[in-house]
Length: 615
Image 1 (tube, rainbow, N blue to C red):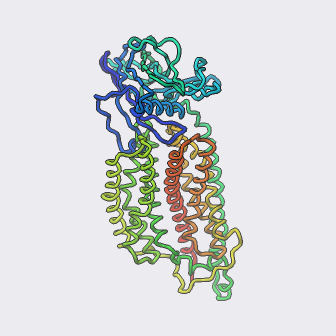
Image 2 (image 1 turned 120 degrees about the vertical axis):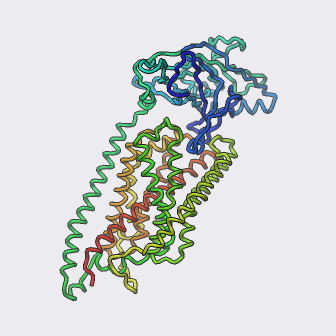
Image 3 (image 1 turned 90 degrees about the vertical axis):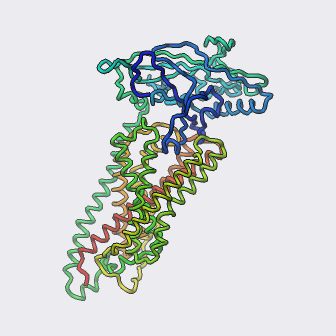
């Protein structure tokens, strides 16, 4: 359905999406809970991003005509006999859903149907989902949504929300052809006993199911709908009321200011080193004429004959840098499009689809960067290099993803990817990404290696005894702190949107934080690189990669802290899934931040040694 309802009596379709819970990572399809379902109509097609995120949209039996209000319309009745094992299993699954507070997600005209309720200080919170039901414990304590109604007081009982009051807000379009636009769809879940199933009245006591219930149990599902004209909401800003009830923006500005302070501090430090110390050093080194002076050289000038010595394990480093470049360009372009509004929450799954497609198409830069750097490290095994670039990092991610998918499949969750989609992703990888990586590597190897400003000595220089601070490990651990400090507030919102099913729409802030992260990674690595060179330690390649890459370890620690402090996830499968997906995110983040650090340090080293006169 488009934005218009041209005919006064046009029908409005309500779609249902998968159900999810804050207490479990496993989403389930609507039909898994044995609600009233629509069997005749075809399901709308979903894009790759929706399938990866486990969205399963299907038509529902809730049908309305525009401006035709209905009260207590019966949809269907479900009957369960606990003596039959299949019925008992369905009822147990429904109880499990209520116990874990699984939420419905309904869609009308591509808008989430929201459940708005009052929270503290007279504010309204609009939740883009509503619960199946709720549970009152054996001691009579209501859990989750049972607190909203004082009649939910039966001990050790499940209350089922078997009735919904739907209110559709619309406004009439005057200028164009006569029609109306939907601007909001709101819902209030309720529970009614309805003793007479054929003609329910939606009055009376709430419907509950005792935990130890035996015999036959029937649930009648009903709905009421009414239409309200709303002239204040424009169609273009109809999402605002959902987003406004998520109070984030003040914290965002605080987070940006916090990050900018770190960036200014680092930039000041780097500028000071560049201008004062380096300028002095270079002037002094270039004035030395006599051999006696040259013998008294100290600091970073001493290691000029070793600074471009190829690192150990240069193959692995070049492969990591190729993959990191691919991830950096992908993230930059995705966030840029998201900032322009192409990937808003209204375009379901667009963000994920865009990321995957870009990653597949960016095989060429990955192959090129890996090959070029490997060649300049003096590597000969170019075939191994190309194959590792094409398969190592993507292979690790895919293997992790595949294991997670097997767990989801075993649990019967809707987030388990269909076999066809898995084959499609493998086809994208093998048929598009891998050939593009080969093409990139071909051009990388054809070009001459990167010219270094100074010659490398035959015999490696001995590195003097290092103080505690200039040893590799303390430097690497310190280097990750500052970039992490810039992003951890933003990280909280991103993790919330993934695991607590909140909408994420502040891509402008995210893009800003992304730029700040790149600058911070670069500057922190340059600073530490300079200190190490001054201490006559010339092994900067791996160290620069790991210094900023260590931010990913802090990200991992933060994700573990978030799991224990913010989430109420239960069940072994959910815990394995949480940490499985977190490992994928940490690996991608590690490659991305490490690559930033390496290239910043590479630029810095090339720059400072190119302005020094070397005998």
